[in-house]
Length: 252
Image 1 (spheres, rainbow, N blue to C red):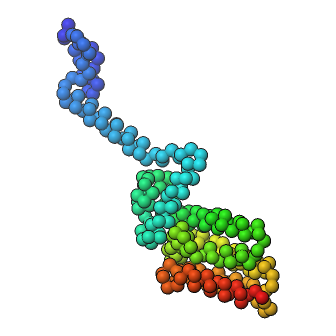
Image 2 (cartoon, rainbow, N blue to C red):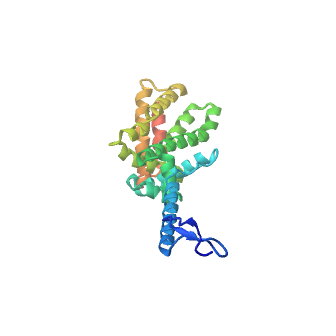
Image 3 (tube, rainbow, N blue to C red):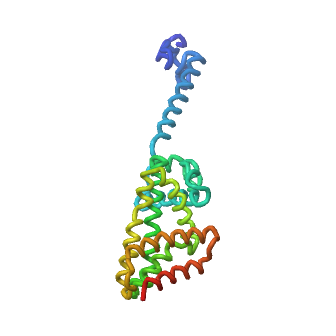
């Protein structure tokens, strides 16, 4: 009975004796059993590597945008604190508290990450500024609106201070990166056009005042003054007084 051959070895195919009791043998020797074990390990490892290369499933609905926002905020913090050159994909992932694979899935490359983070910062600043000035629009005081637009360039709180430091970091990058420059400069002429429009609409402009030229001076000047506040070279009160001085010069 023990000499009766049944199924072959799972590795080499050698015939195996029938089992006297319990489970029938699967291998003809310990060597074949070891080979089978190594093959199973290899198959499991290959499957695990294949799963690791698959992109993570995106969070449902608005969670996707929240995750993108979290990663972008990590870029802002790094750029504001250590400069844009420190914002590697790995550093951003660590700052955001996510895996490197998540950052790669949502943004693809470091360059795209930096460009998208800048675009999102523009959108965030625009949203906040509109919310802060909404009541002034309703009041119809265009000079007050103009002043509020200019003051938005100043580091009045931590959020605006961080944004100004981030924009400064991006300015350096934009000098050699056309894609970043395209996003960085987006809306700059639009801001000057808005200031010129407000000057015209406010009325009582002094004779000889050119709203377009004044808008150029105000936008560029207040931007520089905001950086001086960050450096500690000027006070916020002093900069506000300078803004009021130029508005008094423009309006009768």
